[in-house]
Length: 150
Image (cartoon, rainbow, N blue to C red; front, side, top):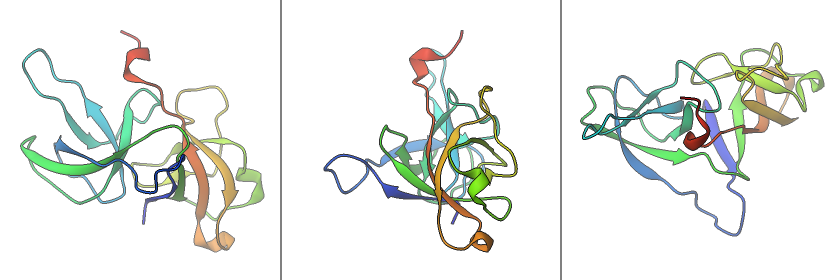
């Protein structure tokens, strides 16, 4: 499953979905980052390898692979969204109300937490299912691109 939108916030029942150019292999449900293009060169999304609040953009809604002329649907991160996430390890209540890094673009690294660094981008609200289901509810801590350091 990777990541699944549980609540999009507000009165809107369907999340915004945008069709964006993609590069490389992107899996359904993975976190994507936006590569900003230089003047006259379009940007594209890619499966997030460097996962920080200023790099992440949203969750892919399809599988694509190829050059930056391929398109993929993406749900951009917005305030108020609640996501169900796959975790690396079994979940416990010790993981709740902590900031977690991601293991990769598909799973939350719930074996530890990070309160100060930019890698702690998934704030866990609660567990979902049994501990062996390895699923947790939470939100992504996203910073706008305008706040990126130069």
